Structure formats: C-alpha cells, structure tokens
Amino acid sequence: MSDISGKVNLKEAFGKFADHWRPRVVGRVNDFEVKVAKLEGEFVWHHHEEEDELFFVVKGMLRLLFKDREEVRLDEGEFMVVPRGVEHLPIADEEVWVMLFEPSGTRNTGNLTNERTVDPEDL
Amino acid sequence: MSDISGKVNLKEAFGKFADHWRPRVVGRVNDFEVKVAKLEGEFVWHHHEEEDELFFVVKGMLRLLFKDREEVRLDEGEFMVVPRGVEHLPIADEEVWVMLFEPSGTRNTGNLTNERTVDPEDL
Image (tube, rainbow over all chains, first blue to last red; front, side, top):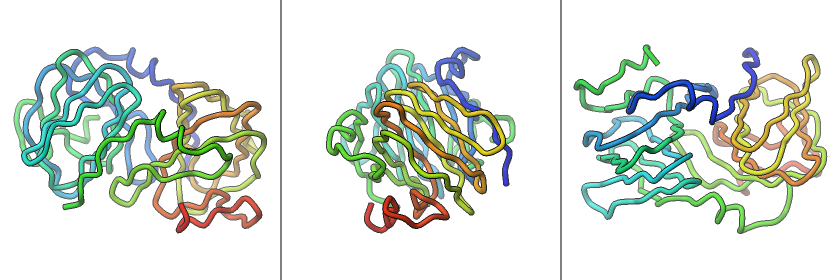
C-alpha cells in the first residue's frame, strides 16, 4: 500500500513557481506522473519514443503543431493525447498553464537533448 | 505509433450523459485511461488491489471517506490520488463531475461486485 499524500489544489500548485517549460510533478498514479507547467513562447519539435502525453489546459490557449495534420488549439478545459512517436511543437502565444499526464520518467524534450531539457530525476 | 484522436472538451464530454456512477472513457495514455463521471449520493466502500486512482473535481465538491484518517473534501480544481489497497467511500452530497485517471481496466467498485459494478469492457 502506498502512502496517502493528501489533496492537491491546482491553483496553489501553479502559484509556487513562475518559470516556463519546466514541469513540476504534483502527483503519482502507479507508474504515471501528473505534472504542472507554465508555458510561454515556442518550444521545440520533438517526439517521445514510448510515451503518450496528455496535455490538459488549465488556463490560456495552447497550440499543438504537427508535421502531417492541422494544428490543434486547446482552450481551458480541453485536453489532447499526443501519441508516442508523433512529432509535435507546443506554442503558447501567451502564458498557458497545463497539467500533463504521462509515464514516469518522460523527458520534456523527448528525443532531443538541448538547453531546455530537464532531467526527469530533477522534477 | 498510435492514431491521433483529436481533442476533448470536458464540458462537451459531460454534456453527453446524465446518469451517475458510470464512468465514460474519454482518453487513453499508454495503458492508462482518462474517464469522466457524474456522481451523486453515496457510493460503496471499496478498494482497488493494484490500481491507484486519481479523482479530479471539475464541478461541485466530492467527499472521500477513509477508514483510518479524516475525510478529504475536494473542491473544483482539486485532485487526490487514492493509493491502491486503501478503502475509500466517495460521497457527493450534490452532483459532482469528476475526471479520473487510472490504469486501463480498473473496475469502479474495485474488490466488490454489486449492482453498481460496471464491466470495464463496457466503458
């Protein structure tokens, strides 16, 4: 049996940080993690080899661009699962707050390693 | 590579049904499922042998009762992970809309089989 870790208030979780593109782990469900992140500007094209990735927009509007289909615009209260293997580019024209749901250990930049890569161990 | 299934608008998803305690699958992330459910009244004491279960309140207030600790009240925008093995009793004094994250195949009544049990295959 795991420990009970109490409840999480999303607004409070977002209130604890201000930087962009650096997800914070706020919950664990078996071998999955719930993360919150603030996004602003354009990220990098990338994909995840093994992990599907759920983007849920808590505040603002997120654009997800794909190589072979039209972009998807996610408003508050909307989510999308980007399947493993699919190249995507998240763009936040203005600040967006997202909740992410993905397997533990998923790297934010997927197949890429660059200055925006955050080691999952540090989250 | 999985197919891209498009975005999900939570309000629309909740608008498609009216019954209580019967979760609908609205997304899949690897071997996990995202479900939405409307709850009203008292459920049944149960636990899940292997599965942690995340309750995220989209609308209303959900009470989670436990055998050995104080109840937790989840308001809109709050979530809690009930670890596997932990007996819990969800109570919605008025209608509550929840989003659930849990491993695929998780049964709503966990270790119990009764008139409220929904076969995961039917979701």
